[in-house]
Image (tube, rainbow, N blue to C red; front, side, top):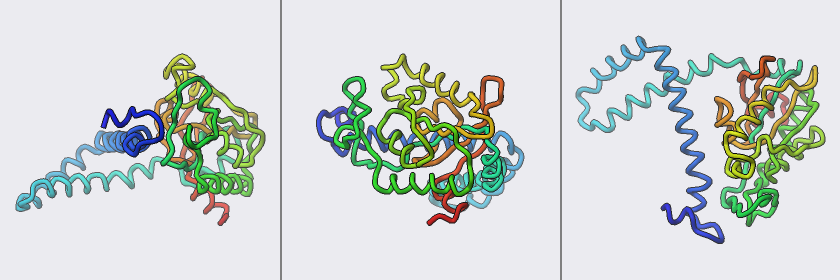
Length: 271
């Protein structure tokens, strides 16, 4: 598998899996584990009682692997309502955005996962050629247009639109139709961070951008990548998901909420 991940030339199925799919799966798993640990730390007594009851019921189970899987699934199910209660309602979030003062970090929309990033030299990431760099899928383009239309119909003010110079991020930002798009290396994909001084540099510039207040009464859109959000913030967004942060005025920012493109469409009743 390691050998397949480093094959040259056209994408090999194993290489596509290693470079694109596997990192995403690993990140999602880690985020779920973090949420689970937070839940356990805040609900230790209840969880301890829950496990005791479940163990008694599972004592007669002959397949021990199945028993433990059932127990784990039950515990994970417990975390869902607790995590949901910690975030504001979607409607409250929309109302807050109408007042301005937020940075909306959007991971680029849905991409064609049969493609992969073959960066061999500086600025290769600027290519909109699917044989060289992963691009938006047609569904991704439609989703971005729908999200932009939803934001406009919801009267969410936007004064600035920034995007990673990767073609998939720039195209997502343009498809939103919320204003001129300015390319920013502050949130460029961490896979090419070495061209800009390393991961720590990009993480620092991304955090500084999220901590910077937008124009009064408006919001800033930042379209970039999942790995930047994962490293610089407590959130790992899905493709096309918008994560809302509020600058705290002290050189940092706080996570406020998150909305998928489907949720944007539901609020504005856009088909």
